[in-house]
Image: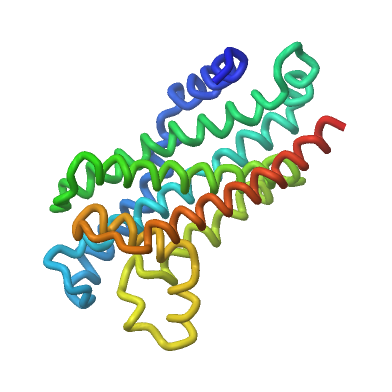
Length: 249
């Protein structure tokens, strides 16, 4: 990370630290979903696990990240509309630093949100048999997932005409875990829904995280999860940079 990126990252992180309610707000919806599913629906859902919060947590973490990256779009949109972006790109700094500062801010703020959600899950009875290496692998998958969605978030942040347009893209991402193995096994779903669920990115990512946290036998899910994350990130990075170049004129 170069000095310019570090300075811009510090600016964005100071804004977040002055308003820590942003992190809490992002965490509230996933936490409420976790409480609802564990304490209201958990007894009626058969997952083959002793503790439903253990089964549920990987999907909840992905929901939290999907909620958090919407703020990347909002922060970028605000910089563009206020003219701050135009001011930055006229300064003698590496222009890519402007985008990378927002991306790294998303990575740090979402990591904090994930920690809040995990702390609540621990209070609800979440327990894991993962060793240190498994935990690092889970952290790596979540970080890669965050980067993939953040680069997606950059595109509407740079191109949207309104604040609502900048953040609306995240809504489908937040609810994508519902049509996956995040809440129930895909075997219980109707055939058409099951086909979609088993071939969308969230299912493989959830399965890989769940296996690392509890089962120890990841199988091919981790490679599928990494392929999805890397593929989305590369494609989003390409279009985000094209949108940024249009902003540069």
